[in-house]
Length: 454
Ligand code: UD1
Ligand code: CA
Image 1 (cartoon, helix red, strand yellow):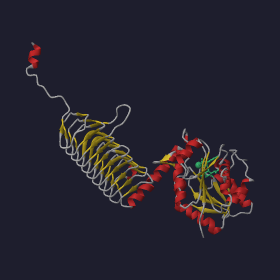
Image 2 (cartoon, rainbow, N blue to C red):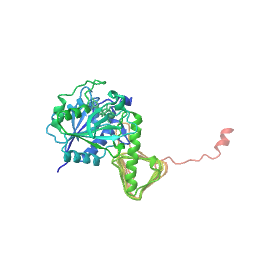
Image 3 (tube, rainbow, N blue to C red):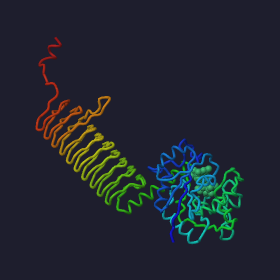
């Protein structure tokens, strides 16, 4: 039997309890907004179609999510049931429509698949995922009569007996779309919050003669609902441990996993060692046998094998095999670094390519430049790439020796095997094999102090 399902993801609420200007589902866990995790897992579980319900600051939420899903708009936040109503035709004819919340980022694809399977094999009209909590405060309680589903009562509407119930609603369900649409006809906002609760539709479906199933979650962590910054921190901690465990089981060494932050989409090869204090994010890919850290930030970069990165930052950069970066280097977007290159301390590279075997050892800025193989940069070199209006490129050939404290005023080209003298400001092209000296000659005025003091 096919376990196809569609998904509606609720993301219209403001999240008052977050006490933030930013809409709740956009708060990040490591490097991605919460709602992205829910979308990713839905796609991974095989959701054939996804509709995200937006409302509060909808333009901002839509822009962050992008165009990989459909959107429904809830202009007024009148409750979770009202939110799902806005999906409208998306629900029609759907035998299995999952409803998920944008604020439960720890949900796993495998669990969604299990839920879809149970829903189909039991022939349910709705299947809700419940969990057992020692401290159920804040969640809706799943009230049973005998073993079967009776109703869900929200925290604010529960009496003392109901409040004592430890089985709670995770906020994850699969509905028969048409049965849900029928239930909406009878849904009221007759409760302590004056909201249209999605949770009430389960009782309505039951009373309409429908079949309500319950799947008790094995791992309650997956359904932690993030309503406050405290819960955001808890969810981030769980996600971090989950991601780090995955890499360690793949053969990556994390010296201090509690103090290592790796985004969910990052790939790392076996026998790479990550030292404490690293923040590795975006779609970064790191190869095998690298040593990264301590204290490095690597964003959406590709690092090949046997690379060392120490106390450095890189963004949208590429680093090839056997290269060392840092300490205290900054590789900015579109830096392409070859093999066996040395990028040393206080070096900044931007929008430049540095070919194999080149050494940029200290205190140097290389911007908008194409640098050949086996070039040696003296300390304090600056590519002067900006005249206040436009940017220009420098081209440096193979085996060039750039003397200390050289300014290369772009656009300028230095030919293969050329030298620049220390302290030169190079404004004209330097032909290959030549030495460029661009500084005034030293003059010693002997006995000058004695004459002045007379
Ligand atoms: C909800 C459930 C509760 C469950 C809990 C699990 C209801 C009535 N209650 O409570 O039983 O235990 O989740 O985490 O469903 N949203 C909208 N539009 C609205 C209201 C909410 O899109 O009008 C969205 C929010 O952005 C959020 C999600 O729905 O992503 C859940 O809303 P929230 O207010 O957090 O519900 P809870 O009080 O947590
Ligand atoms: Ca919630």
